[in-house]
Length: 407
Image 1 (cartoon, rainbow, N blue to C red):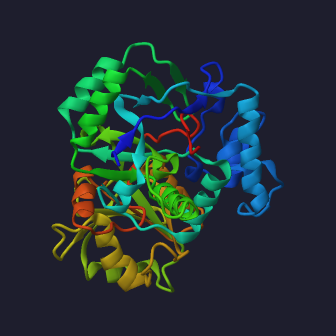
Image 2: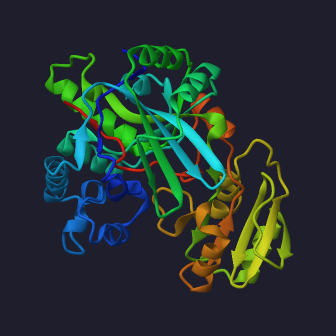
């Protein structure tokens, strides 16, 4: 099976795109999604988060919820808001946020390549989240949430994409997070053949955002494969919706941590414990770490910088925090299940950390130095796993701009 394929996308007509395009389903909670979609019947959130069409408090995993998403998808197709392309295509997808710009290729990517580790992961998944997305995919019969992936920069791919991009995209929208999303379709057979060959020449792809989406797509493929007596082939369900970007255009922000309590320690006792493992400096203003191996910490009304006294070379900063603070001092071992720890993306800034601590919701906050894309690829190549919530890619792909229908 080929690593990628073109596909005939389901996408919004250009005049509706601004109304349709929505944030990824997993960056909003239900009430945020409900507010975003208020008075907008064409928001893709009615498909990706259909619980917003039910009363507050409704279980989002009820069968009726997924059925409502399917109903909303059909309603938007019937109204002509969404339409199917007539021929299989690739799509060039550019995101621009301020001065930062990254340009990727939208593809149907091979689930077999994921299963065979040619598409590599760096995070563990949570079964209930995978099951939720698998039920959504199966009910909609479509992949509506793209998986963002990385490839090592390829001059051949860059040249082909440069020749496709013009000043006038087929679809262009600006989201309320000040990100411009632009899309160009690629239906020329010669260009599709050249792009397919250039991507096939890549050794590997790496998952950036979307571990749960791709795991869910693989689960649905396995179920449908079993129903087809185990046959494999060029069936649509053997491919998932992906966008591949060169590694040198991706922007990683820090993924910070907040903790609900000091587990009975006073601030002074907690600092004493930290002094055993770190050089602790008081700073007068909100301060981000300036290099790997340095952590920033906020206790009520006071910032600190922490530098490890032990060996930190080669360890991810998220590992330093977990291994030297969260586990030994606060007893937080499993970040995937321990409800005492929360995660705050770097895009929210240090003021959000201060607010959560000063409001009394949290006892302490930690700001981390962002991981590097090269670190992610190194971890994936070694078959290892990064700590939960170690990477926050920004800007985010939108839901609704392109969807992949399975049959």
